[in-house]
Length: 128
Image (cartoon, rainbow, N blue to C red):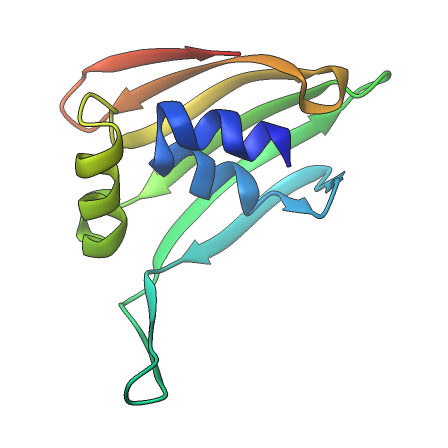
C-alpha cells in the first residue's frame, strides 16, 4: 500500500491509525470506532503479546474518484503504545503523536493532505 508506506515515512502514528480505516484497498465509509494496540511476536518463545488497547473514533466520507475525507480522534495518549512510540522515535523523531487527524486522501491514496494535532497542541501537516 503506497499510502501507508508514504505515511509511515512521515508519521508512523498516523500510518497506524489510517491503516485501521482500510480493509486492503477498501475504505470504511461513515462513522468509525476501533482499538489499536502494540503487538509483539517473540520468535524464540513463540509468544504473541499485546499492550492495553487504545480507542479511536471518527468519520470517513468516501467520495468519487478515490477521494476520502478522514477525521479521527484518539481517546487517550497514543504514546502509551510504547513499541509504536519507540519505532516512531527512531524512524521519524519529529513526528507529532496525534490526538486528532483530519484531511483528505485523493486518487486512491496516491495523494493527500492530513493535519495532525497533538495533545499538547503541536501540529503537523503531512502531504504526499
